[in-house]
Image 1 (cartoon, rainbow, N blue to C red):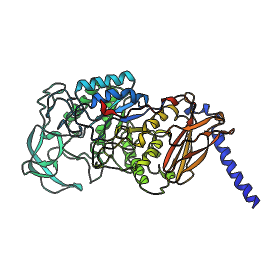
Image 2: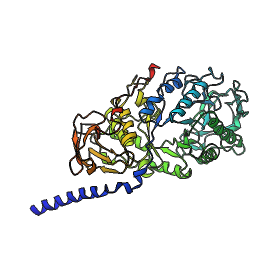
Image 3: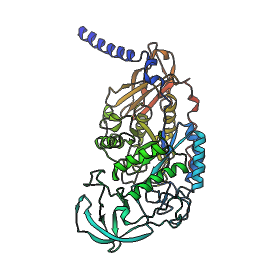
Image 4: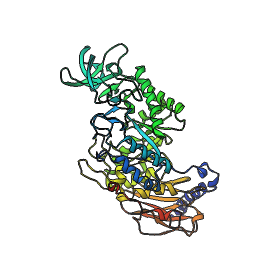
Length: 535
């Protein structure tokens, strides 16, 4: 028995020796001199009031966002849509940013072009980057109908044609009468599209593939439903050179109109990846080699996302949809094994190209892609994307400021209002090498050791079960320091022992983020104002 105990003690000592050895000479590792962390915020939720004041509100809160650690905002689709009350995914005119009287209003739901420019200039002064949500898959709200030949296809298997070519009438004529030929002289007709879902001649809804020489659905798209080129409205045909040139021209044009630094490619699995790659390469050649592009390719398993990255020569990053679905499933599964939280996620396989997120406008309550995450687990999820070294995290406007509508009515800010604390902890302390303590099913932790410019480091403990604690090594240089929880959910103080260890507690179904109580920046916590609608 004594021999067994000595053996067990030796194994434990060996584990701690290994941990301490790994933390030696951190200054020689690449992570010692990495740039400061960056953070994106998706700057809208689905139910933002349609009062045309969104650009003005964002302009007012940009300084607070900067103070909280946000470096980039992803704006909603700000091109003219079919109605001044819709969010812009029903796009009408790429070249109208709230400048022309079209579709019932000069302004978009979000505001006027002048207000958008003012917001952009404020962001530029503060050093906040702006990404644009580009809806390039389709057009909506045509000005008139045209007649043309098309075949009806099986909605579940789009490669199966259910009819011979027949004449139909569709909303595919675009004149842009409010804008005329300013910025672009391109007018759109039936031959610029590959599919529609309504035949006005017979008042029938179906998926129609437009017929004609060289016409058909793109093949370099998702294979869901056989071929997932068609999504909604009038589907753009990127085999048409006029369409290609007009959209490439638009990319250069919007970069001249606004001080952008990146683009989100909406509905990336629904239109030609070859054109997307051409578009990205064109933009990098003409407007900025350092621009960021993020593909919104919605798939719940990582394989197809990795295939998309390969087809795009990894010129883009991709939203980690599989991770969001794991957050949702784990949050609703009692006793889920937290050690497996990153299994089969994009950030596990492609950490440099994974945009990690917890929620967005598509997954919020009531949306078609809703991915419910229980209230307590959202804090854990955000800690896992914000404080670890892998991935490019994004926070959601609806979690930061609350949600104003939907089936559950108005919802308050998530994480008990502590999401700004987690964002700021990322900016100030989440640096350097990372040591994981994923050693218990329902209580995991990790340590960031800090780097040359951010030496404080942090210790994070998460539980989806009972209250617990975890012994973790933070470094002998921290001996004697008093560490407290920046989230203030745990009221205890952890004193780091002479060997550089602390025993860090966490409440039941909660997360704690421990930092030296005298670390630079501790006085910056607790000042974020989430009441954006006072403006």
